[in-house]
Length: 134
Image 1 (cartoon, helix red, strand yellow):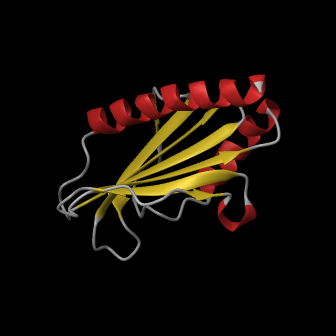
Image 2 (cartoon, rainbow, N blue to C red):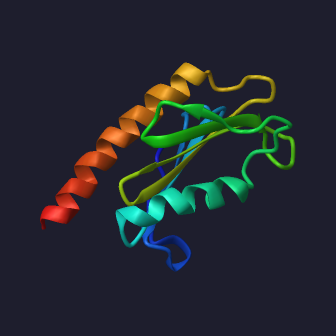
């Protein structure tokens, strides 16, 4: 069930939204930050990845084929009450973080993270291109 999106959260250009399943066992939090230009994204993504606070994991983030320079990391929420997987990537001047939350011990399959991330990238492509032509 989608909650209304928050535009420019904390005064940062972009949007965020939380999508929750009808039975509240899974959720996806999506945060998109729109940077001033395309050149900023390659330097900002590593900073955002280094400060990721939504997933506690003993493993480092690993590459995934989503957007430009996608990474995924799985573990638990910081409080340990849920399984969490974070997908972070850049596309043009946007930084995207998608947090997949599920019941303990039931991680979101990598194929699902990949599919949802690629769908979000397609939507982002359309939205950013439309914003540039206005």
